[in-house]
Image 1 (cartoon, rainbow, N blue to C red):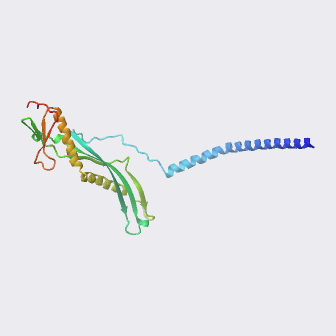
Image 2 (cartoon, one colour):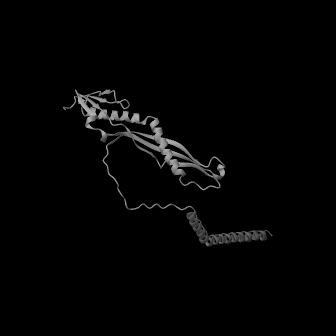
Image 3 (cartoon, rainbow, N blue to C red):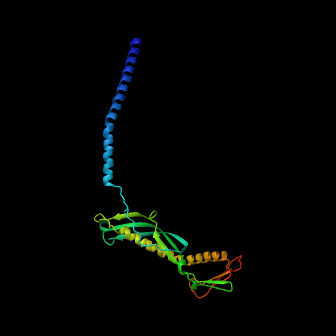
Length: 238
């Protein structure tokens, strides 16, 4: 009796192992057979994604036209990095959820100012008794532009019954650039640029041997500011 029970258990174990082996073989066969179908479905999904969300292709024209070449002697003496938040909106007065278009633009800009030394003439400099008087050209803003790599649309909300305004982001960028320029002016970028220009020119002229340097003030242009080098040497012969 015991032998019969043991024999039955062994037979059940053999049949179980055989059944498991057949199941795994069938499963592997099924996965192998379905793999081409899965690959085909994946390819179809990829193609559909490319159609719905195409990658833009940018082809620069091989022809380059250089309109003008100019020699420049700009002394850039200060750079501001400015961040500005600009809201641009249309149709917010009535039923904005249906007919409105609104975006929030985060603008990062750069403003660079300095002095154009090409405008410095002989008449703007006078050397008398070892004292050099200079009337520097007025400081200018050379660059006031957006950093496109850091500027972006943070949020945009378009009404259900309205199509997105194509030029809204462009207008927001233009306003942001102008606001960045105004912010730099209000913070005193021109005054600081002039002070830095005087400091640079003073050090340069001291190294050339001019003991005392006089600058016509940026604002008044009537009084003179005298700066003396810490370790001055004799001025060169005229």
